[in-house]
Image (cartoon, one colour):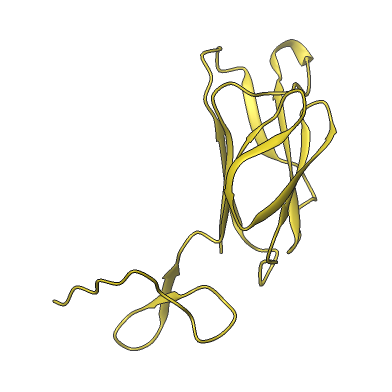
Length: 130
């Protein structure tokens, strides 16, 4: 078994470096985008990779826009936020918003039909994999 040690990896094309098995079949890539943002008051990105902006579309409704588009809209998004409140709190990808350049997020407290709610807590965060 070999170990590769490098300060930087670079794809010779325009995409992210990919991992391949010994026969050359792609078996994975690195996370293509992630963001940690404040969802209350003036919405702001705390830190990110490949995210150019967060748009506040209204209470608990945000759009995440990529710096570099995804090669396909068929990517996986993982979402979460830290909270000390009961499990009635939800963060989800907004239905029908996933595109190569952006996707929507809704946050809320859906107990007793209270609907969308701006969330901050310690961290709203999203990661994108394709």
